[in-house]
Image (cartoon, rainbow, N blue to C red; front, side, top):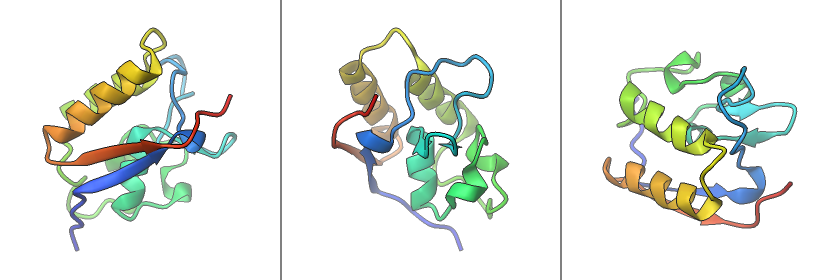
Length: 117
């Protein structure tokens, strides 16, 4: 059954951001840090598990992929990943841009908590 997500929250203390795109450091879920990128938080709302998202780059790489990746096509996922992993953007800039990209797909994103080192 296809899930629809209209709103979700990114907890900054569990947000994996700013690691750049070198290697696989970035993933939907990084087991070593127990953190998720912005797409991982969205994937969790779609029913993906941390185990399923572990070290995966894209929602369609998960084994629980059913009929869709919500409303996020590959280009949108790429745009989100690029912002999430940008090492030169400030956190407020990233949050604003991530909210704007999701908003284009009719999804509201809220950020809560403090980013952990």
